[in-house]
Length: 197
Image 1 (cartoon, helix red, strand yellow):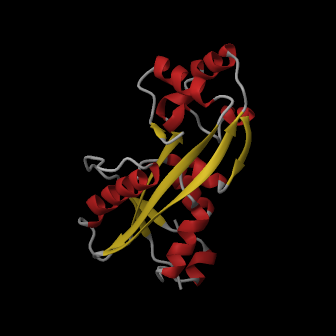
Image 2 (cartoon, helix red, strand yellow; image 1 turned 30 degrees about the vertical axis):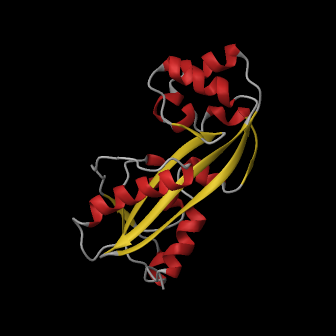
């Protein structure tokens, strides 16, 4: 996946250690050449702070793939939703999604994405946080959103780029971070690490 602009910059093709279609879309949009190798590592968390958790998970994903591809830059990422410091993962079922959305409605929460870029023992890990304000939702609106199936594979039981957008009153920070990858920060890191010259 290369384009003329990035070819002029001599950008290396990175390996994305994620199955997320949203991360693929963001890398493509940013004209960053990549290929996908999904990490199959067991994600064991030892941290509790949301920012540290996503950094740890991004590192686990990246390192599992990097050991199979020496000499290549690997990008690992992980996103969580947190409300008052409590991480809300992907809902286990519709009841769980209803609980999460009930907690998020009318509140401001945080979305954290951890990123690790790794190559042959060189490691660069960071995270971005975005504040998201959700409007008040009626029980009917919550149930209607759940019925569409959109919440079931998403952290915090919603996707900002989908139909849930009508309930977003505002954000403070990087919108793309909420989608699943702080692409501007990733690009800056790529330039800093001289993956692109």
